[in-house]
Length: 435
Image (tube, rainbow, N blue to C red):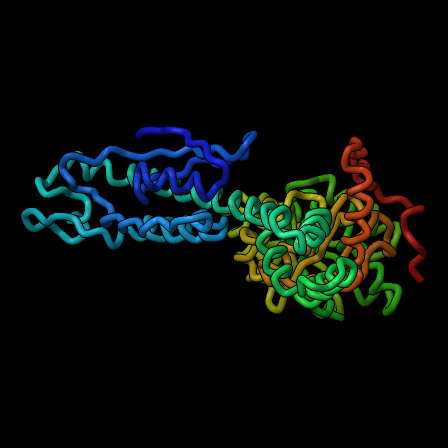
């Protein structure tokens, strides 16, 4: 494998340099801004002598445009990269390789014209390498997307205010660009911002909170599931009575979570049922299923722990009629939120509880992820107090809160962010009286 860096005034010209030098099969490793332009790191492989593992013939580059219009837009560069990525992803299935003596169908794809067993043994390594390269390309597409949105804000004065507005809110660049295209460019900036706010409110999915039934909160560690469960239970008890609600905990890994629940249960005088394993949890669930509201607190699982999420799915499948909701912390990075949503999608959550809103500087990332993943918001938590700091999700309130936060963020962006408050511990001062 060979690696080389190219510099150019912009990304489009850098892509042209790479294509002219190495054709469409070059792999972009990184792309980042430098003084006077961008620098692109690219890798390519020398052709294998036997020609046994060849990609489809590269498309011939089209004629260059003359005059000042020859420079491609960033969007065009992104489209080219997407097409290349799709083409390479299809190579293992579609590439035509020379045939040798008859072999079983599953081996023919791995041998060269000479039947080289060495190339067959290397096939899995090449496939793994291609997967890594595809991931690198996906990362570059994201970088180009961000750069494309930034360029739009500087090259088109009519879009500059919208760019600054959505960047301050922390709206995902691809979503921001799509929304900006719907805003009339001849309107005054305040009206443009208002139109954009309305677009965000319209696109943010919201689902009504269930009034009864069995409800489980799932999500990563520290997302706020346990405290949110207690808030839901306290609100229901205030409206319908303590005997109408029960809490079931399946979190056997964290002793602290069980102690926290016990403390809340004593203060609120609510029944708390702690279980030691999946079998006991399923049995207790059946005993409590007649309660008008049964809240199930689950253990936190990392989005990387696929086996743990699958195990939780098996536990929940043993609880008939249960409704699952993802607890999504607002104070995590946008890409982490996206990974969390993707990972827990295997549990088919009906919606999301947005937690820790009081711990974040900006709300745009969680709003963007809910829109892009089409996951409806159901509840929001905005502080540690029980039960006050939990409310039904409202698109207009969330977007207005995001705009308000962005103004504060812009004023304090050059200052050090205050340290996050320590995790809330249950106390009688935190909890309103449950009648």
